[in-house]
Length: 195
Figure 1 (cartoon, rainbow, N blue to C red):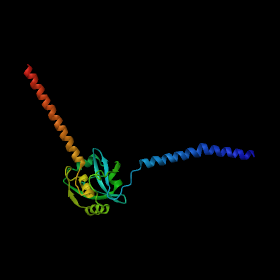
Figure 2 (cartoon, rainbow, N blue to C red):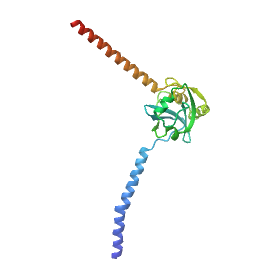
Figure 3 (tube, one colour):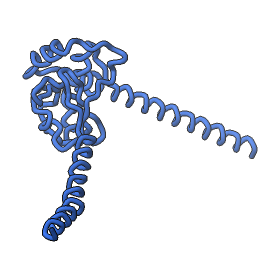
């Protein structure tokens, strides 16, 4: 009988000190991985890739691939070097693995204009995107960039919030500079009049 009780104690010790903590660890790791997992893109989704100082955009076409507009010298994950390559006026439509295009950069699904524009059917988005692969298109940071390209494919509307945001920022900065200059001139004039 003593042998049986000794075995039970060993089993209980093993269960409480090894099995249950290990199980808790695995559950915690599983939950953590679910929280960190990126949502799986669907056909026609816009993919925003965070580069240093700007976002690169692509459109998901299935099986891990995206179609994107990139200057011929665009290197996946090149960051600031890619910005310098954008000084050209032509770009190539490429179909590449999302993991290659993103490189080590973070990315996310960002269909940010779905509330403003009705997306085209996903099969039509993918068809239009794949028909353009390999073509050389006009490229401009301000009017024909990768964000314009993917928004045109998804919504039929060519737009870039990065460009709009940059123009707004420059406009506000110019306005503040003009106001500061005017205040400086008025203060200088007032000071001269007092003397």
